[in-house]
Amino acid sequence: QSALTQPPSASGSPGQSVTISCTGTSSDVGAYNYVSWYQHHPGKVPKLMLYEVTKRPSGVPDRFSGSKSGTTASLTVSGLQADDEADYYCSSYAGNIVVFGGGTKVTVL
Amino acid sequence: QVQLVESGGGVVQPGTSLTLSCAASGFAFSSFGIHWVRQAPGKGLEWVAVIWYGGNNKHFAESVKGRFTISGDNSKNTLYLQMNSLRAEDTAVYYCGRELGAGTYEIGYWGQGTLVTVSS
Image (cartoon, rainbow over all chains, first blue to last red; front, side, top):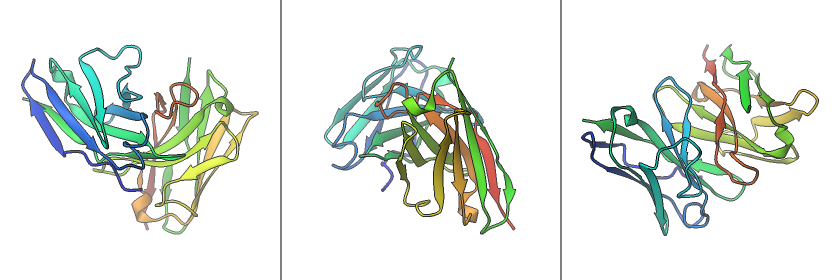
């Protein structure tokens, strides 16, 4: 049950795009199309931003998009806004269990 | 309206036990996978456990396996996380969460969290 690997930080200026990677193994990210991404503002409840790699829950803007290739999934935030500054976590189904990434702090410069 | 409310957190000594509750409303917990996720101070999110569809299909992270158990009370639509042999490293905010749709594995709905502090 190793955590998925994410870069600790990422940044971009308002209006730019930022992409966060999430690397797993053939037992989790590589095995299932059940990768999710969560946005977490400190002190608040985590919010689901993407699920099943590319799907957006109701209310999540299309500036948030996802992809997957092999054992690496990615989240792209386009048109960065100040409110996008938060911690982002990926997670993957891994056969009856779930594993999270270590989190990426996104800073809007 | 889906709602999850955790309770039962507090300050406990190492080696002791504590039970957290997750009261569900707006849906029957026996119809969905319900997860527990925690966040230690200054750390990231860590998946702890899941109970699938309120039954006997329960799974735990290696870090808590053998110490934590999950049970449910259908009549109260409430889940419980029984935490035994608590350690300092179990100190965290504990969230319960429900998958967005049955069998989809993400956590679409989250409770507000309850803080557990393990300290002597």
